[in-house]
Length: 88
Image (cartoon, rainbow, N blue to C red):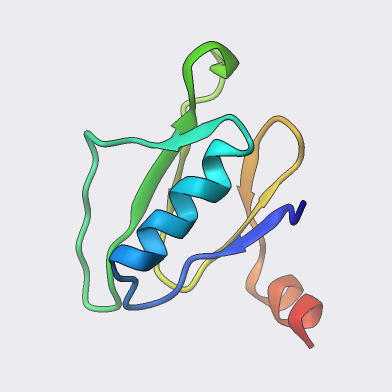
């Protein structure tokens, strides 16, 4: 199971569906109460789902073009240089 996900710039419906499947497999979900559109595409707020929610985990805002990593409990943004090195 891949522990990183690249949220593309200019994301479309199919990208959102793929992200939702990826999050669901890790016990996370898209927060439907937060929507942000921008020039490079939508940003997405994610949070732990249901019983996997942690009181100290508010979630994460993923901006267009960012890579996110799941560490088994939390989602974190991968720094751009690390993401570029991993895909090289």
